[in-house]
Length: 74
Image (cartoon, rainbow, N blue to C red):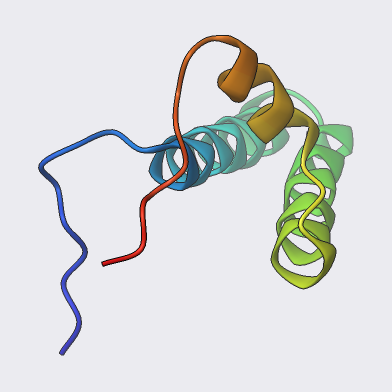
């Protein structure tokens, strides 16, 4: 079993947190307001795939400017 370190809030961890929150909001609004809100989940999923394959993520760029640092390799 793999357990991620929870001692610091490094950039990638915050990206996953925000992606999870956006996904939960998209499902909630899609269920309660309009099915069009499910598109938010599609966008989050596409962004996660792009981030993991080529490394580009607009949210990571914004978080980097706000002072979050990428995880340092051990």
